[in-house]
Length: 535
Image (cartoon, rainbow, N blue to C red; front, side, top):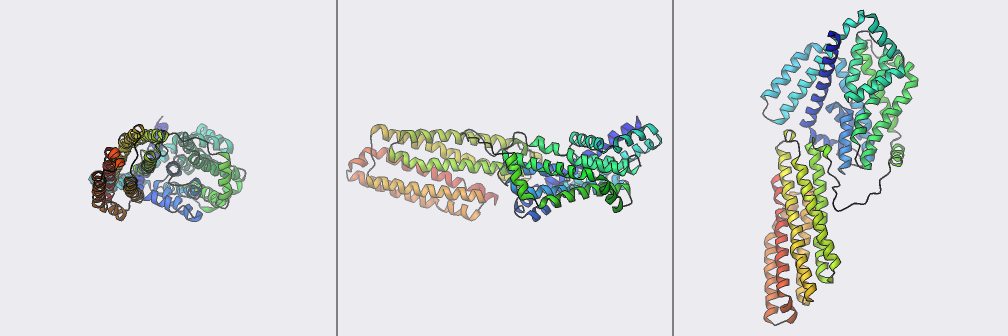
């Protein structure tokens, strides 16, 4: 009974320590990780290095794959850019097992104390996260010590020794058991840590430990598979690539367990180090092997997971993914993409509004009004998505970005409402009354509309790139826009004084169009305040 308690307690601590350490480091450098992955994915070799570095930090290839699925779902990366990173992640995940193999279990209390003190004393989020990472390492080593101490009495139990040898001396059984166990605990490192402890106590042979290593690597694919359910075709391809590399690697190595075990045995004398090296050699081997064939692998996976011919409906979010809510930097990136999509709809509404006045096309007026329903839907969904963000993982910078995002989409929604409820009502009124602008008046409306539309285009570009200079240029247009609106109003009044019939007939509509374009211009300027505050 005491052996089982030690095993379960040790495994729980080992697993919790791995996750706590990885999650804490991911929070501490989450934004930089995204920049590293998305900015260094164009070259295959550099992508492998960046994938290995990121996974070495967060201590889980499955977590890296989940991040990639989120990036691809958000449109921040393409599927082909992720292949090198996936292979690098396989290398990076070996760092955790190598750390466990050092068996610095005597230092576990020191690491736990240091991590707890740092977490308790630190006032800022980054030092607190680093303290939790150190605490996680301490718990990981304490869990390993409990497992080592717990399995030691099994050496004198003939039945236990025989059962372990039967299970591990049949490679296919060892692979399957390890795969299922890794899938259940969602960690290959924990499974290999247990194998390392059993090998250290002489309870399993090295060939059996190697089989467990293969099974653990295959079993970790379950996390990526579960995360891809309901995702886009591009995101599903990321999960399929991760699974394919692991399965093919395991299938290629399984018939060669004998020679591979001999290589591992020659690499070190310590059983723990041999198990860790087996994990490293396996992942390093499949990464180097498949790196040469990534272009062909990409084509094969794209054929296996074709793009679904889905028709985009007005009332559907394209980039928001609730699975990213626990990673605020990723979630904000998705919201940013959706806000840009919303901005494109508003920009199209403003562009087509001029045509609605010129052509007297009721179908176009109806279409513009329907697009405002889409704008309202996107504004609501983005706002609700941001409201569900994990506040505990957000720093002051991300909080400012969130507030700025809400302000941006709110002003976009106001612009959409002005176009829908004011400009389109005026267009209908002009149509039903059979009015026609004077030639000079229509040219002036076109001119002012063009100025407002151009400023909106600059504002959207400034938001997309967080460009402070361009944002300031948009704001500098405010007095010019006000002055131009006054000039056009005076020009129209001049035509009224001259008794121009067309101007008399359309005076109310004409002046209201100018007023509403000026209101839109004010909201365009308001779009820029969060950018200047944030930068």
